[in-house]
Image 1 (cartoon, rainbow, N blue to C red):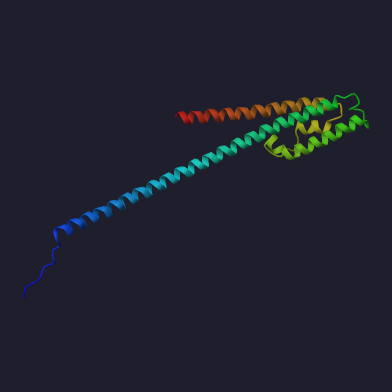
Image 2: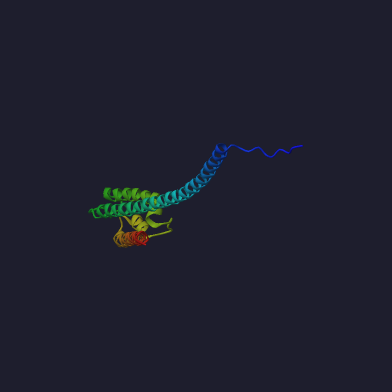
Length: 174
């Protein structure tokens, strides 16, 4: 009995199968690299997006704090002008009642914005003292101290911003 060997493929078919195997292997390798590249790019995109969100939040918070300091100064100056009126410190006078109403409005604004002005909910401050003392002789001292607090707050805000900008510039250069 004659033993049959494995059937031989024609040479063209063998070459075609080898080429097809190369194409499939190349596609698998290329797909693998493509998938790895996609994952790495996605990871960097997430990091960039997170950095953008942090920068947006930091910038928004800075602007809110800056607005609060400016508005706080505006309220102090309004109270200062109102308290400077001739009858403003005379209890029961129309000007004294106007100062009291303005002081109440300022206090409501402060209560709604104190976290931006103070970085926390303060238990006391010269600013609160000035608002409460409007229409009295004590207002002038409290107003001066409140202005100092606002200046210190602004200096702290701007110093923090300069530090962050300097750090960001150094990171960009490095």
